[in-house]
Image 1: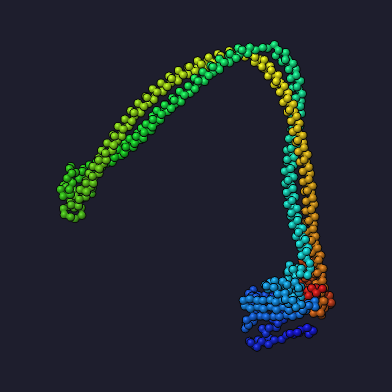
Image 2 (image 1 turned 30 degrees about the vertical axis):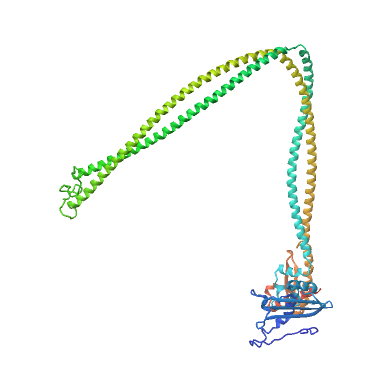
Length: 602
């Protein structure tokens, strides 16, 4: 169908299958076949169950469209085929086969070389009957999406997104720096406190050193005079030390011997005590068993007495003296029943002599059996209890003998320990006497040694105070250096925080500038004004200059669409889009679509 140069072409159809005039004859399919071949999509229709295979005719097995033409002077050919299970796409440009392995990759080459897209073609060239109202009915967001295909908003959106992302990054950095500043300021305050304490300590040590140095110098001069007048007899001291060492050795031997005696005693007595404790435990177990047996014996005795009382009660009730002869055939019963007062009859009727004799005989036998059983249990338990009592008595006797043996052994060991302790006490007294003699012998020498030690201690004290003073001053200098370094760190963190805050404010401003209310609004405003101008040209022709459609960005950055109708007096009256008539709405929709086409072309 070579349509070039033919201007407006009208297609008419004749459906010879079902006789419904031209409906379903393929007019729309023929017009939209080029769009399907180039993009793989047909005109959009308001359906929910559309499938890709819907392009295949009911009577056919495949759909095939080939489009040939020129772009920028270069010939091209596109062939698209679709069957029920698969499809194919071929693309040739300037006699070069650009078909790829997959339909998706081939479609990408077509879009790139021909510079087309499904949305642009459907909106500017292939105006399907279902999408002609798309721009006028579109929501604000959808209309902006349509215009974004023409207006380069992606750059500004990316810039705004990058600015917001960078702002969040700088905000996190500011929070981190705030935390670091807080920690470092606390560290600085702690260092300054320590530095102040170190300064006070250094001053105190220096003052103490000067005071003590003067006191020690005066004292050393007095010690030198006293030390020259003191002598000690080292020979007497050595003799006393040898005697004291011998006495100490003797005391140590006696202490070791006493300790060994204690260990032997503890081991010997511990074994006897263990045996006594073991016997005591056995005795307690047997005593508990005897108590248990006695309680059982008492319970059985009670059961026996109850059985005897029951037997006596039956004998008394029925006047039976010899329970051993309790056969129902030989029992002599009273003339009247002792329980109900009725007369006892002969024969086998109710309440007869035979019936009562059987009942009484059974009761006597059961009572007699219970008496014999409890008496046998009582006799057996009595014997077992007697055996346990004998066993307990024997064990108590053995336990008493063991306790007497333990007491005797403890007394024997006590005598041995007292003798050893007396010998140790005597040796210690001798040691104390020798030690006293040595103390007297060493007194003079010790006085001299004390004087020398005092002199040395005084010199050591001076040296120690001097070292403490130097160390305190060094510690103060180190802490002061740390404080200065911490101040530098805090200063740097403060500068970093200020820079981050300044950058954050700048990025917030950039996000606003690059955002929908900034550059995007400015760029989009020009496109909206141009679309409004192009559309109005067509609307003037379609409505004979009786309709106006204004598009503009309002204060909320929404694209407002306002219709105006010329009144009989020639003035324009604004009308909401919802109140337009069907024809007025169709003219506005068609004019807006044609104006969008001109906007794309320009």
